[in-house]
Every structure is written in structure tokens, then in C-alpha cells.
Length: 369
Ligand SMILES: Cc1cc2nc3c(=O)[nH]c(=O)nc-3n(C[C@H](O)[C@H](O)[C@H](O)COP(=O)(O)O)c2cc1C
Ligand SMILES: O=C(O)C(=O)c1ccccc1
Image 1: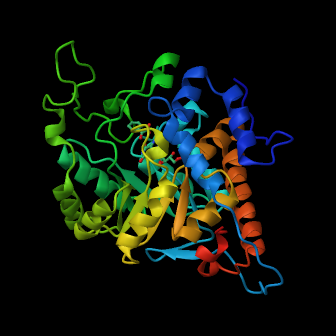
Image 2: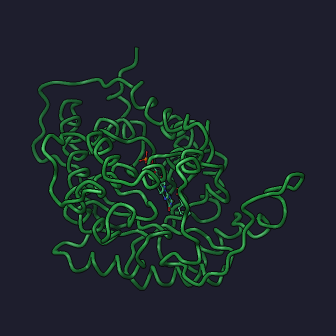
């Protein structure tokens, strides 16, 4: 494996990092990062949904005083692109999430730290605080079977200075990721993860012939709606629910106290043939009707993709795999470069679509036949 902190010559777009990352990562890590559920059809649809939309440009506008800044839950962001929570950054680089947070901070992008990070949430927050301009950090929470342990994670995230909880609700189980299986990728045990060390877990991973895989008790303790109301009652931080793909669930989310929603199919990693996140976004936005911010992720690879998501009504987007690819290829510099490329592309697209600020981005930038 070759790793340096230099950006290789000829890297001009996010996709270049994907190509190069494949050469830097072990076959198992590549399968884990890039793969998805079953036949990976949802991964393809996430991309196709963006490619299908055409942009409508305008000319000779006045862009003085413009910019990409926004405020979410009282926190200021320079631009509407955050790092999506992703697990196991040590597969990409020995410094793991410290390298990521340094890259995110350099590019002044908000970062969502995964429950399944390879360093503790405290170590990552500390690394961020050491930077000249700490970037907003949010914590992605998986509700653990042990609710006491979950409450402790919330308290730790609040103490460490995280600005929001992103509660991932779309994966009580994962359907098999065949590419990982074929490559022989072995996920680390949950009880050995940095944030959940010592957590008692015994869940059913296999079923003998003639046995039910799912319905033997495991699901008796997975998170349900009452847990969201409970979280709301014990947490001081804003709570976003990540993985909402139905308007009814968006309504329930708000009803149970969620302060924000992330429309996401988990990058096509949970259940294959779920629709593209972008295709689900309009229905969720219609239901939410401006009551809480709605973010989205899945398939963002260009600044024009960010523009399209915002044009449909998203407040901001999150980017998963491209940051991991940048991390694998060039450590913090690669992460920062990925985010910088996306931000620059977004700004160019805004100008050409006649948008001075994010508030100017609306349905008018999408070309309708
Ligand atoms: C390697 C990998 C690990 C991930 N781990 C998590 C995780 O720990 N928690 C979570 O909520 N989402 C996780 N996700 C999903 C991302 O947050 C995000 O929804 C998805 O990657 C967005 O799609 P994109 O990769 O096309 O940008 C992971 C995604 C990848 C690729
Ligand atoms: O790989 C993932 O997508 C993910 O969300 C996850 C969940 C549990 C442990 C590690 C990663």
C-alpha cells in the first residue's frame, strides 16, 4: 500500500480519488468502503438520479456580497457540505479519524463522527480543538441494545462539545453486502470498537437451515419510535434522524421531537433497490413543509449534485465515500481537497445558475422540458 500526504498530480475531480483509492486500499478495505447491499443497484441509482437532472443557467446577474454560508441549529457553516458519518477510517490511514478531522477542519467543512469510528469521540474532538479554526462536529449515534450505554454515549458527546446528534435509524439490520463477503472482509466486533468498547452484544448473525435469521429475539431490543422521544428527553443537543425514506416516517420523526431529518439510503448499503435518496427528497420535503431542516446524502460526487439537492429543497448535503477515498490517497490533504473541489464546483455552478446565495437556489435552477 502506498500512502503519502501529497495530492497526486492529475487529480482534478472527486472521481479521480475513487480510482486512486482502489490502488491504495487492500482489496478487503476497498470492498468495505465502496460496496453496498446485494447487487449495488441503489448505489447506481443514487448517481443516476443526479445525472438525470439538467441545470438551467442565467446570465448577467449581480453576485456582489454573495456566498455559500448557512446556519444550522444555531451553528455557522461556510458551505452546505458535511462529511457523512463513516466507520473505520483506520482502514484508509493509520491516523484514522484524526487525519479526517484535520482535513475537514482545513477545508472548514462540518463533520459527522460515526459511533463506529476507530478512535474515541473524545480523541477526535480533541484533535479538532487543536486546530486554528475548529470545525463544527456532530455525533452520529447508533442506539445500542443497552440503553444505559446509549445514554452514556449521548452524555459523552455533549461533554466533548459535539453540536448535534445524528441518530441513524435505517439499519436495525444490514442485508448482506456480497462484495465484502466475496473479498473476505471481516468487520471488527462491536465490543472492540473505540466508542463501544466493552459493550455486551450477542446478536444473531447466522441461521441454521430451517431457522429464522431475524425473528429469534434480536429485534426485540432494536430501537423504535419511543426511543426517539426518550432520547429527546435526555439529550440537550439537536437531534436529526438519518435514514428517513418515507413521508410518514418524516412526520413521525417530527412528532417524536426530531429537530432535523436526513434523507438517506445509507449509500445503498442497507437494502438494495431502495430508491435514490434524491428521488425521495421531494416527498419528504413536502411532508415536512419547512418545520425542520432536511439534509440528504447518497451519490454526491460533483458540486452540481449539491446544487441540485439544494434546488429540490435540501438545507445541506453530506458526502460519504469520496472523503474516505481522499483519506486513503492523501490523508488530511486528500480529505480537504475532496471538500474543496466540491465547494469550488458548487460555487461555479451557483454563479452560472444565477444564484448569489444559498437562499437564491430553488426549483428554477432545474431545467424542465
Ligand atoms: C464505509 C462506509 C461506512 C459507513 N458507516 C456509517 C456509519 O457508521 N453510520 C452511519 O450512519 N452511516 C454510515 N455510512 C453511510 C454514510 O453516512 C452515508 O449515508 C453514505 O455513505 C452516503 O453515500 P455516498 O457514500 O454515496 O456519499 C457509511 C458509509 C460508508 C461508505
Ligand atoms: O458500514 C456501515 O455502513 C455502517 O453503518 C456500520 C454499521 C455498524 C458497524 C460499522 C459500520
